[in-house]
Structure formats: C-alpha cells, structure tokens
Length: 406
Image 1 (tube, rainbow, N blue to C red):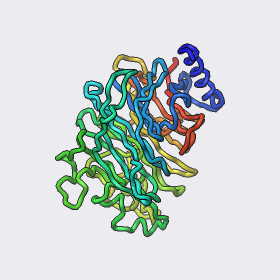
Image 2: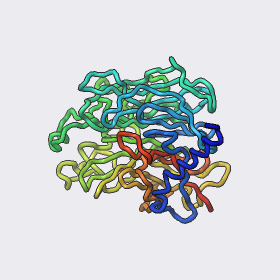
Image 3: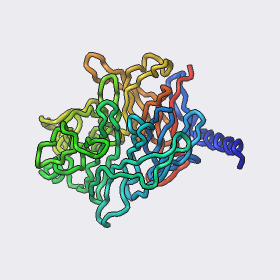
Image 4: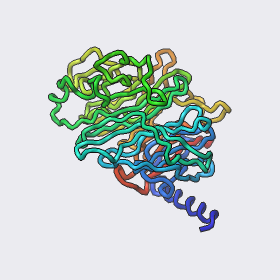
C-alpha cells in the first residue's frame, strides 16, 4: 500500500476506535481527546515515557517496544523481548536514561520465560539503543540484567513501574506483593509476609544505580537482614511511579485491597517508609479488624474508597510547558490520577501550604477502556493508555491524549 494510502487507513481506523465511545466521553469544556496510536499501531499497550525529541516510547504486554511520533501519529517497533504473559505478567514499565539519546539506554521491566513451572522470574533490564529517531532499534546483544527475583506463579500483583530519576541519576522500580493467601487473618498476621519482610524484594519500591549497583544512601543498605536495594515496603500492587521536579515529589499509584471499604492510594515515596500492607489499609486502619487504628505506618498522600471497585494506575502533578501554552492556569500545579476500573481520570487542587491534594473532581470520564498509564507530555497534554482486553489484544487498545482546544 502506498504511504499516503496507509496513513489514510490509519486515520480511518483511529477515528473508528473512538467513534463508538465519543458520545460517552465527558471532559470539561474546551478539552478534547485525540488518539495518537490506535490498535492498528499498538497491541496491549502498558506504559509510556517521553524522549527529549517529544517521541513516546510505549511498551506492549506481549513484549513489543514502540517509538511513536506524537506529531505525525506514526509508530515503529524498536524491538521485542521474549516475555511470560501468564496471569498479570508481561512487559510492563519503561524508562529512558535522563541523557537519552546521548546515553542510549532504555530500561524495561518484564517477566522471563525461563523459570520453573511453579514460579515466575521478574527482571529489570537495561537495553542499549542503536540509531536515532525513526531508525532507533534495540541492539541485538545490548541487554544487561540489573535485577532478577523469583515469585510464586499462583500469586498475583507483580508491580512493574519504573522511574529514571533525573536528579539523583538512579533507577526506581516497583514490585508487587505476589499474594496467594485467601485467608485474611493468616495473611495479615504472618510475620514473614512478603510485603513487610525486608529480606524479600516483593511488595517494595527498590532503588538502584543505572548499572544495578546499590546506592550507599539506600535506607537499608547497612542492614544484614535486608535486601540492600529496598527503598520502601508495605506495598500491595504498586503500579506506576512519577516524578515532579518542582517539588521533588515521587508519587506512586497503588491498588489497595479488594473489600468495599478498602482504599486505593497515591503514596509519596519517602526513604525507609512502611506503607502498611497487609497490616493496615488507608489511613492506618487494621486490615483484619477494620475498626482499630495501628500506629507506625506511613499514611497515603491521597486515598479513596473502592466501594464498587477501583484500580489506581497513574498519578501526576500538572506542569505547563516552559515554552508556554498547555492547560488553563487553574490546572497548573493540580494533581491528576487515573483509575482503570472506573474508566476515569480525576483532578484535585494541591494546597501550597500543606502540599496535600484537596477534594477531587471529574476530569475525563467514559472512555471505551480503562487507563493503565497516565503521563504528562512535553507538549503540555496529558497522555493515557487504554488496554481494552485485559490479557489479550483489543480494538480499544490505544495511546491517547487530552488536549486543550480553547
């Protein structure tokens, strides 16, 4: 097919993707949704990050990595990893070295196919990229393993979020607690619980050098009973990390328990903090008794009850582009979070005196599939990924953005 005809076909498919959902999408006046890459370009998209040239680098759960030109709305596959896609596993997080492409490294979080039948093997790796722009590709022998750990195949919650911190020049990664115990009291009272144990990498945020080394100022680096890469603990399903440069905040979107009064959370990541799972939920409430407060744990920066279901998958603080433009001033410095189950993005003002978000309000509602990622683009638009098929490809798979139309 000639290039012009191929681009026309892409445009038609993209319009078709949201045409059935257009009447259901709700945004504040002046905003609109644009599809940057639909299912004809990406399959089972999971996470995205931006390079200095404005291109979005997007992972697909089945192992694909794409570079998307957000202006031309075209994509090419940079490479592919061989990944285990059983359960909630696959290729998840992506981060670029802060000096990319001068330092041509991309970091990925995925699950290796080589493991015992009763286990899974999670990996944080660094790939070298050759070529630039539309010619970028993973170097065939350019993979370096930074961290591996083994989990129980029957368990859930694998984490997979990545953050290449531009100031610290360090890599943060999230790991799920891999629970497979349905007996709540036994699970909460287990002294060797994975999320609470410093000797287990699961249920944590870990912090390492870009070469996998242990930073000397990691909070448990000198503890012989601890995994030295552990930065925080007490996490259930820590989904995505985001960094806000003006405040220095590292925010973690996290899925809480499954009971109606459990909370989904956005946590401010503080070195050495214990966020309580599975001992407590929300603002220090006992997971088992549901009524008693338990001290000694770090409360969420922001939380909300599950009620009929919730799944917090992304959080960010909005900053307008340095060159100007972007969203109206009322959103500058505001907090946004995405919920997969509720197919929504909400916003809230952040009190400059306390640094805490206020009451949230609807921003984006009614998309065809729930968002699994939320990122601020260099163009001042908020980007989100919809993954419509859970564990398979869907016609609702897309990378999209919310733009201010005036």
